[in-house]
Each structure stands twice: as structure tokens, then as C-alpha cells.
Image (cartoon, rainbow, N blue to C red; front, side, top):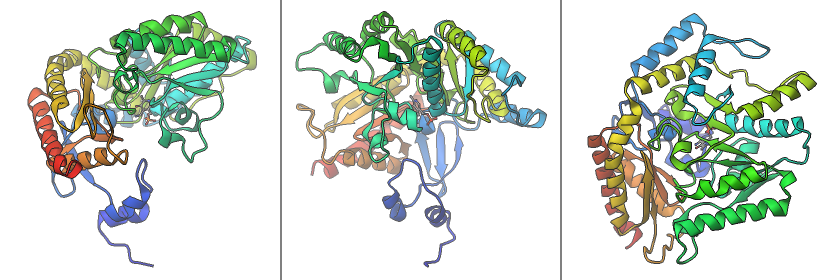
Length: 456
Ligand code: PMP
């Protein structure tokens, strides 16, 4: 047996199984250890400073070092560190948070269920959809529609909803009754000469044809992120949801808005649903709900869904679902304080005031020789690396260019996320224009450094 070194990096390699990591590469490459954070910056264990261009994983809206959240957690820890919410038990942080979320909801919602992650929230929704249709005496109406490049989580059922090959391949997924439809990305999937409007019409027609082919009595729901995040920050055509929602209504198919990334101001409105004109029956949120400080997620259901669930639970005696930490009081208290900070700082106004600078710098990257498309909205965006701008031909092998540019960004002091050959930007919402400029200056230097490597 080889001796394990004493450094954190060698102990990481010896002891940790990393999520979303090339495990073999990790054995040689080792970890990047992040030691502390302040504002929109994080520092690694050598003291090197980075602008966090992805707000950790799309979540640290308020940046690092928010004392009010630290205090809220400590206060709640001292008062009631933990308690469950099964079998009629409750506590005020949960009640207050549910009330606050219902007030903020983009469309009238009836009740809030709490979980600990985006995956758990969406997994809960899948079960609610099936429970709802059983309640209504429609045991066949169970198929759930998602979209290619969607991201809805990693549990067995939510990884099935996710429309990305890495989440299915070798995991024996997707499970039955989950189906993937068109990705609404005009740049990649429009026919030659097709306008955004025509593209949206075609996707809506495909949706209707799909429901009819499957049988409307078998199709229960459709999940959609308002703006698709991990699939590459994909902004649908302006009329996309206006065209698909009447079809869903016509065949009594529920619409679920996955607001795990888009919720809480990210797209320039409080909810992504408002930005894209979605009127969901069920909404899930997480991440920026607590500024990522503690794990918590929420599911909001409308009155129609709730009434069916009540009737079913009366009939069978229980809604038999919940997590030990559903509405953990400390996480709920931190989420509540996060919502108060959003209000106190007029977060939405701040996002709207800095977004034009963010979008100006982002879209300017579209002129760079390595970039085929630069797209964004609010304070979220991505650039797509291509080998040939004219033909949109990707680099080979897929993902190599994205990983390279991302690594060069780290060298320049900016942390972004490579999703294949798309690089995402989703900085803390509190970022100011000077740091937006600094972030893009650093990233541009990384891109320039990539030219001789990718186009020798
Ligand atoms: N839905 C969306 C839109 C997400 O972006 C994510 C995570 N990036 C999830 C669900 C899953 O959330 P979690 O990683 O907290 O399970």
C-alpha cells in the first residue's frame, strides 16, 4: 500500500468520491480546494483569488459572508435546532416561509411542500402527479414529458427527466413513462431559414402530435425550466410558452415550472415564469431560496392539484411522502432571512440595473473567433465554443474545448462552468458593474489564451 500524504489534496484523493467528476482524472489531477469566500470572490487554499462566475452552482445569490444569514442560522439553532414536520407537527420558520412563498408566487398557488434539494423537490412532484391522477381515477394518465437538454435532478426519477446523455448512460435510465421532446434552442435546432417564431410553432405542433400519438389519456404532465440552465443556458423563442400552454390545457396536461435556477430574480423578474410567460400548476424552487447557505427546496401546488390530493389522502388515510428534513427549521429560518434581504436591498431593482452591463459584455463575446453564440438574460448567460463560426461546427472531441477554456479561466482568476463546449455565467446577484467587467476581462484573457491551443 502506498502511503497517503498529509496534504488535504492527497487525503481528498484517498478518501473522497466526488460528484460530477472524472474519477480517473481526479486520481492524478486532484482537487481544487476552496478555502473561503467573501462577496463575489472565493479563495483557494494557496490564497489565490477568483471571481465566482457561477455563484457556486447557480445558487449563492447574496455572495459569501452575509452575516444576517449566519445570525439567522445561529438564532434558530439555539431556539430549536431541528424538528420534523410529519404527522401534523409544525414550527414557525416553516409556516412563515410557506406564507412568504405563496405571497411571492407568480400565479395563485395553494400550498407549499418542503424538501432539501432541487432533485428532491422535482422527485416529489413526479409522485404528486401520479398521486393526483390516481385521485382523479385516471390510472393510465401517468406519462411525463420533459425536453432534451433539460436538467431536473439526479435521483432515479429526476435524472430520467433530465435530458442529458451523461445522466442516463450506464445508469440504466430513463425509467418508463418519461419522454423527451424538442429542445427549444433556435441556434442549434432550427431548420435553415426558420425564424424563431416558426421554430416555436413547429415545436408546439410536435408537442401536440406527440400527445395525440401517445394518447391524451396517458399524458399527465410536462416539466420545463423557464430558461434551461445546465443544458447550456437555453432561452426559448419569445412565443414558445404562449404556443405550447394552450395545447397542454387542451389535453389536461399539468405544467411544472422548475425554477430551481431561475427563481428569485435570476432572469430579471422574480420568477423565470414571469420572464417567459409560464402559468404553471406546480412550481419547484431551491438554490437561491437560501442563497445556497443551507440545503432547502420547495414545491408549490395550485388549488386544483391540492384538492385532488386532499381527497385521496382522506380516502387512503395519508399523503405518504416526506423527508426527515422537510422544512428543517434552521434552513427555513435562513431562507426566510434571505427573502427579507432580497426585499431590503431591492434585489430585483439591482439585478435590472446591472443586467445591461452583464449582457453587453456577454454578447460582445459573440465576436470572438472561438464563439458561435453568446446568449443571456438577466444575470445568466452562456457562450458556445465552435470550431467554425459560419457552419457552427463544434470542436472535436466534444467537451475538450469547454474544459480547456474553463481551466484557462481558473488560471486568470474566474470560475465558470463548462457544460460540454458551452461555458455558463451566473454570478451572485449582488455583483456590481466593476466586478462584471473584471469577470469578463479575465474570461476574455482566457479565451485569447485558448486560440493558439484550439486553433494552432
Ligand atoms: N432543477 C434544475 C433546473 C437545476 O438546475 C438543478 C441543479 N442544478 C436541479 C433541478 C437539481 O437540484 P439539486 O442539485 O439541488 O438536486
